[in-house]
Length: 491
Image (tube, rainbow, N blue to C red; front, side, top):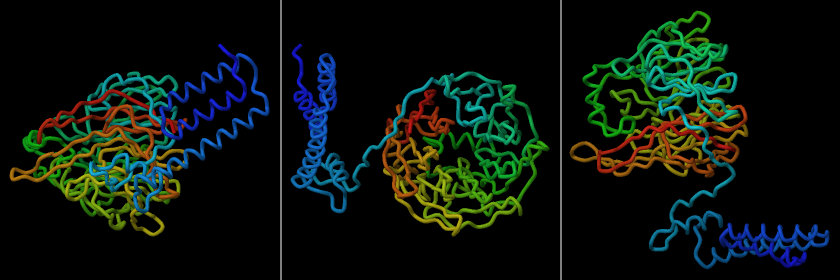
């Protein structure tokens, strides 16, 4: 093979970079550079003066790329008020008429998802980070518990729960144990609770709650106690079965059969005594609400639904604050929209980001808002790129929030009640930057999923596991599959 001169190497690099700037096949450009480097390395090192030519090639490539983008914008049309990159994205998704789409696509930034070891089974609805870095996953069956080891990327069985329970909460206590409370065993809503001890890998019973609850929220307070709020109370089995049969997709139906109101009561678990005691009640019953511990020790409880068996009644826009010292709830203002199956994330600056969910009409929303404890008010921030519910939201070490997956459902009302028009399980993800107030797209998950868990690992990665994927074959006819796959987000 003939030897390449330094001038030829610089020219090859310039061609490759310009090719990338002009959106020519990136792989071909990368291979051209690789071949040039190999041929040059076989003969000698690059002489210092040749680096000047390479640097010039880099500058030329950047200028060429910018010039090409500007030329395309001038000749093919621009979106008013949008940047060049947004205009290019909008033109890529233009309508058949050639008119740019109204909402430009987001530009991808750093961050990727990679597969990790598969779960032993897909029965994993709650994940809890333990003090030793392992992640405890529990599902509906008593034998579902398993542990994820971030160092090996594998799952392994641990002890069995004392009873089967779906819809339970799992809260890491200060001493390293995990409190699992409430839920349903398929025939009854439970008041019982149990503790997982990582040192023995076993579960043991603890005191029962003052009320049976399913789908409640649980929040570790600053003093080490656990606040339990709301949830669905016990209900006649016949009503529950009728609801499950009549609804094409539990958890997303905007219209559900009428049942008992969800609970407004709350209680506290004391790890020192192993007992639950009643505390002040909320102003309204809630299920599917978010519960966030604030920097000052108060707890923000927002949204959810107050009526219907499935918790799918009109989404609430109200919010309230729990004062652990007084043991009472007080008003915390009103959100800009009712929300159910949304997310609430405490930001590094003390504010709370509330995003997505379904609104009072049952439609998915892309809107997001911020709660500021200093003023006690909610304010609108930039919307998600896509309306989504049952997604995950995780605060990253750099202060950004990773929003991933979820589902996007569109329905229409009919004379018979309602009908699903479209159902999309999402793999897309985006990052929220509290400093700029903007969402930016990041790499998509390897598997579309909703109702999954997302856990921040000690090394800054995020573990996303289980969840579901649903497909729509006909109006009101859906097929849902549980997932046993797992993946990691690398910031």
